[in-house]
Length: 295
Ligand SMILES: *[C@@H]1O[C@H](CO)[C@@H](O)[C@H](O)[C@H]1NC(C)=O
Ligand SMILES: *[C@@H]1O[C@H](CO)[C@@H](O)[C@H](O)[C@H]1NC(C)=O
Ligand SMILES: *[C@@H]1O[C@H](CO)[C@@H](O)[C@H](O)[C@H]1NC(C)=O
Ligand SMILES: *[C@@H]1O[C@H](CO)[C@@H](O)[C@H](O)[C@H]1NC(C)=O
Image (tube, rainbow, N blue to C red; front, side, top):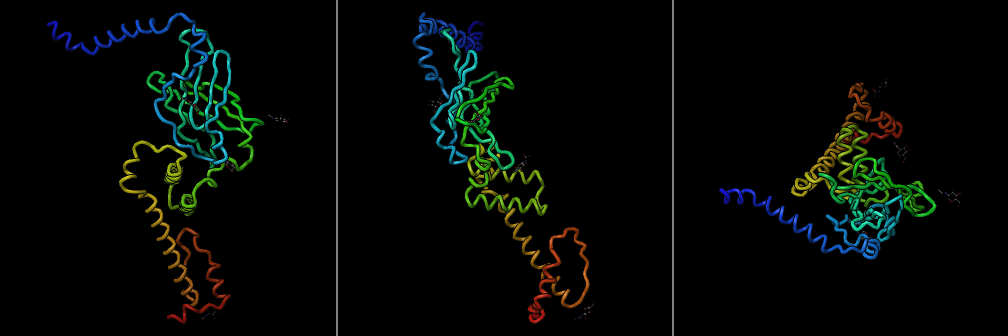
């Protein structure tokens, strides 16, 4: 009976032993120095990040912020924002166990309306079932500094970072930072939306893909594998679609000008005014009879 009991509860027992030992070790490890010498001077050095930061990305003129850190003091706490790396919090106290923790590790940009809005630092120290995370908003200011810190939700922090680097109205635009290839992809997506070939939802999804490919956004975890095995099927589809559309449009134009030149009336009942009549009229004005000659 006891054997079975022990076997069933082995993990729990191990846990209890560890707790007891852990508690004892703490007492041994922390002699009564009131943390004066060892804590405030070495704060942060014992912090363990759960993840490595994402690569540096976004507007190149902000890359110079990498490796720097900016502090903000508020009552008992000091906050450190190290762009493209991390956000940490340090309790300013002589308690031997003053809190020091990671509020987030650099992960990705928040993009809205073709503009880099904020840096997301996630995967910080655990907070219940979640991990602490921090959004750092970039605003124009006379000097680079952390201007405010708040905690709008439990364990979600909101920092405002002022810097002269973002004062130019174009300084945070996404499009100019993209490679030529991705700019072209974005152009095609805009064209497809304009021609109502894709829904608003499809538009947002495709744009997100472009931002992920550029490294501005972290890839959503699930679709990664699919995309790796069948490389960007969406883009192929869009490209084919656009090409097909252009082909069809050319054909319609050709037929329409034929009809005009033969003086046969036709209806504009397609519902979408995609082909301006001026094309045909222009041909008349130019006296272009090429098509008739070919027949
Ligand atoms: C936070 O970033 C700074 C600056 O890059 C670095 O020196 C420090 O080790 C980082 N701390 C953690 C806990 O990642
Ligand atoms: C989006 O940005 C454009 C210029 O970049 C601006 O004119 C427009 O007001 C912005 N819209 C929103 C909703 O922020
Ligand atoms: C920036 O500096 C100018 C002149 O030095 C001053 O008038 C202005 O109020 C400052 N702005 C901020 C946001 O500090
Ligand atoms: C085409 O129709 C117009 C009137 O709609 C007429 O004036 C013209 O002569 C016609 N042209 C030919 C080639 O039939």
